[in-house]
Length: 166
Image (cartoon, rainbow, N blue to C red; front, top):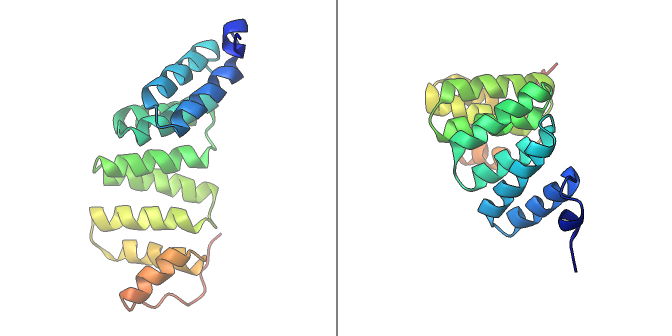
């Protein structure tokens, strides 16, 4: 029985869905192929770039992932997750200063998202070994991130004072 893609090889959403299934099964090569086909069908479709970036990241091809997240940001400048994931992968490649800039932008877009302070705090700690990383981790804890709270408790670091986030 023919599938949707065989019947409608121009159907962007079908390639996205099949790529997602391949990615869930950790068949990254096939997922990337289908996301690439979706991009060919709809070059301004940020979703295909975003999820292909996630797939490249899962395959540990951080350079390609960063390239795809950059395209997502070009197409959708307020996409917090694209900044976040690009920052994470920049950190994986030890480009901490650039990662911090991406986390800064993500925090600007979602200032109450504790996880973003956690990521930026880790990047600061890798980059400078200074106090800014600890301050970001304390902010993440104050915003309710239980893993960061536990981490800081293990180090005996207080974080309970209220946080001012605009």
